Amino acid sequence: MQDILFIGFGLVLLIFGGNWLLKAAVAMSLQLNIPKIVIGMTVVSFATSAPELIVSVKAAMDGFPDLALGNVVGSNIANLGLVLGITVILSNIDVKKSFYTTDWPVMMLASLLFFGFIYFDGEIQRYEGLAMLICLFIFLVYLLRFQKTAVVDELPEDDMPLPLYKTVLFLGLGGAALWGGSELLIQGAVGLATLYGVSERIIAVTVVSVGTSIPELAASVIAVLKKEKAISLGNLIGSNIFNLLAVLGITAMIQPIKVMDQGLLTNDIFWMLGISFVILPLVFIPKGLRLGWRDGLILLSGYITFVYLTVT
Image 1: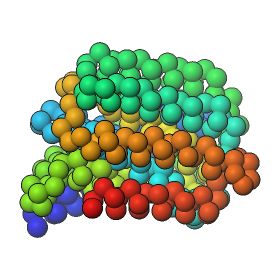
Image 2 (image 1 turned 30 degrees about the vertical axis):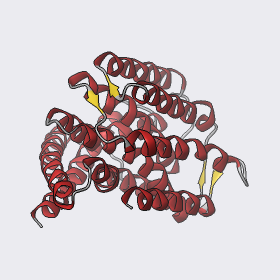
Image 3 (image 1 turned 90 degrees about the horizontal axis):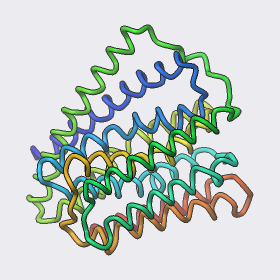
């Protein structure tokens, strides 16, 4: 019971922490006059990936590498299967050209890079972590150079720049809540795995990854409800790129990550590659550059199948 309470309370802290960090980040980018599509791909993605980053770094440092890896792999599957699935069931998303010229190819490259680094020796070394961070840096420079001219809707009224003291307050609160939440979540997850005799990886790719994907779900559903669909898909693709390159890159730089449970290499990583790949045909079939409720049902049922097969 205590473990479930730890997980629940940890997730609540992570969600609030991510939200406060997001508020501060968007306020800062508004003050710097950064276009909205760039905010979606960089600032929002970074802020919504903060729970994954803190949880993975903490798990790796505490000696639970499968939690660190399972969290990222499971989160990427959840972002596309669960979050994008639910989002497009609620409302069609028209997809911009940048999706197939930049966002999707970069996400697939990041996924294949991660696959190449981990599949053959079961470990991400420090120099591989550094390579991932360099790739992320190149991608961000490209985004800021060439996607700055993207045409996006005007800011809605409620996205007002915050006064400086509020921005700093949200940054501080967000950081503290994320750290506290990650402590509780890892304690609860390891306790739960021990209690039920399952591996940390199974808890990580199901419970922990869904928990750390809740900020993405909230951000995407709110973006759709507010009719800001430019942020929604960019946010999810960006978040997956950040999870792989930033979260695993930074984690491996601090502490090389070694696979303990082989299920990660024989099952989870292929689900991640598969669901990342399938987004492309879904965007073009049946109507070009649009995701509708049918696509949402395909993604969601794929995600449910993944969880069912992993748990059983």
